[in-house]
Image 1 (cartoon, helix red, strand yellow):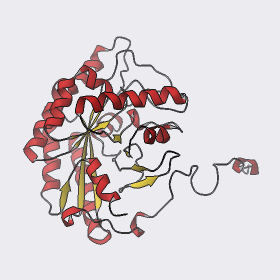
Image 2 (cartoon, rainbow, N blue to C red):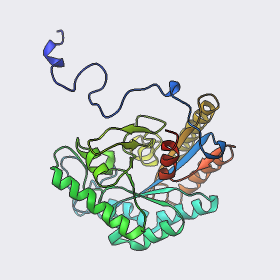
Image 3 (cartoon, rainbow, N blue to C red):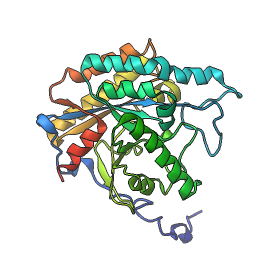
Length: 307
């Protein structure tokens, strides 16, 4: 049975993409990016610090890592909360040892519940990225403008107040967005988002409130995804991250600067048996010349400065 002509009869469905947020482009034909100090790779480490409420709603969907046992699910709640009590400080210690300045994507509610955690991240010189309000409040097109806007504004208010930073970066819980999310982010002073996983370099997105920079954040080599969605081992994760870096490093010699994004979760890589695998990954990356480490916001600014 052939596809009826009517299938193509709505405004967004056409040859190309089903939206006009940005233009399609070939990564290998773009103007080369030049990073500070002549670096070939910008290393962007983003550690997720998350709060999974006990009464997480099941609709319209649960964010990855959500509690899944009957209420009250203390088994998974405490496992996730380990990241906020122990794991995050283990990651911070390793980053301190390596002299790295990175980004921490933090649920806004954590600023109210665990202000000492925010202070520890800021005192070590890291950037705070807003990671929604909590992992039970996902963004989707079923939300009204006022409700979604209020959630975004509250997350930013809490994190800006607790950190003293501008907090201009955003990562949605579960990377989920609704059709209005980009406009609401830009309206609330967000200048870059880590939600879209379709590039190795930043690109400008169009919103009715002005441009919003999409920053790369690897999905397939996210520690939580590899462990809990792909059910692969820590050694497999290490090899995948090394391979990702090696390809990007090789490409940078011919095509210009690349971004090596490394998404971590405090309740995954902060575990005692996993943190040494993170050390191995960082040692491999930092052993190469021409690696510039910076928070995601600083990398975004360096990209935008090139016009």
